[in-house]
Length: 151
Image (cartoon, rainbow, N blue to C red; front, side):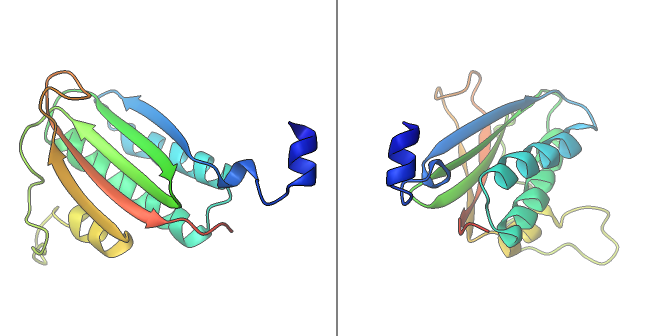
């Protein structure tokens, strides 16, 4: 395998598809742990600094939202496929994200900017309900995507 990599540099392992998953207990430490996880993975795969910074911010916001709407753990998945990076956060709440996509928090609101930041920092984003699917108990998954130029 090393010889193949030496003779065919265009087939770098950094260009392949991959997936990492992390389950976070319901704790205030969760967003920071997820930011560190996202930094470690994306740095290793040489993702551009702009995407890396945005993915860390979005991960922190989505995990914070999930932890605020449930008392259960949350699951984070970071994957690269077809040249796109997808970050998704699952929680057990069946309710959609708290604000509609176009809503903006008021100047005195203590929260409510997470989905606005997600929309501003990602190439695409959305959410879906999980019904008898990949996760026990249903819930929802909120995701964000980026094209992944390498650094």
